[in-house]
Length: 476
Ligand SMILES: *Cc1c(COP(=O)(O)O)cnc(C)c1O
Image (cartoon, rainbow, N blue to C red):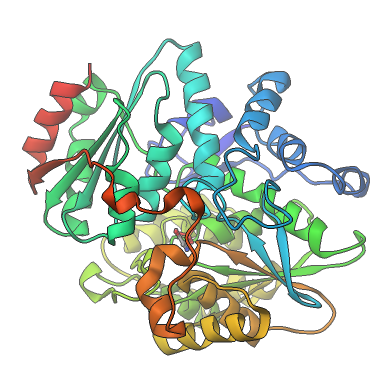
């Protein structure tokens, strides 16, 4: 299995070669040269498998340059009950990505039982183990530099803590994360984790990461890498739970299932698209956005119009507050028939702050073949959906999952079960839960009082120089 770039001007690479890379050298994103097709007999064989066994089958299709025994061992270590025990302790405690039935034909796929209570752990935990494996083989080191407004940073830190050869330098806007999220990150005492509280906003943090990454001499000298959502291994890891959700929600491989996915950077739902291209019987992929509706607009009209960051609304589902969906390029590559010249033209416009309109193209006319439908959700919708889930089903859901459930229900049709992906636990967004339900969300046992633990972080001005000096002083 080799990987090519959506812009067509980079040599093809193997899985482990692109593991530590971000963008391809030509500015595109990596994708498999062809999607592996799953046969009927494979589906039958995979249906009863445990999560790690299923992961080794699915990921084995994408990873051509790692001995399968090593991969299997690594997956057994990654997807183990002791890592995914942070969620609600119930009858399915210890199961990886359990399916919770709300009513017949309507389900939640629980993806938030990992250490940071968000679905990002499902992929990031694997990334941590893969990085360590590959660095170990090459006797190499890596300094991960990132910017976070909450979920990604903590997920990355919990995945990389204590890993040989890896340090994490995570920038966050000082005083802008919730107390819970701040405590999750800053209470880590591992020597390889560095939290940097930047005196500025999230965009300042991201600008610093860009500035440091664009200093190629510095980047090479200090082996700077990233773990952002365009990383191919993260997308691949997410493909696995679509198989898991499909098997859990259906009884035979003659059935289809619909999936509803709260979307920001298009990473999660891109994995669903890939699972569908592999032949998993997914009828529809229902994309939900919040008030930041760039992606909904595209799927309804064919117009892709990324917003300026100043036009991005701050909402009560903050992990979906994006102006430009970084993984969307992967889907459009397939939509335009994998034509790299078209991609260079379309993204030439996007990269210079523009838009593109496919409404008149023959490609967009075939969009239904890809199974996508979409919708949006507002703050009021979120509150109503959180209430409905609590009152009707006794299940407390977070704000992002509520966006997915709201739009999913709007598109619900007979003939296939609807699986809504849960992307975080309600405890991460306490304020909105209180507003919706007038009560506190439940807190997993291990996390009571984390706000009172000692915190370890550096405060720094919004200045790339200061961050570089800090990295230089700590990266050896
Ligand atoms: C990151 C995140 C999302 C958005 O996922 P994408 O892969 O960026 O589409 C949704 N909900 C939560 C809770 C998240 O952390």
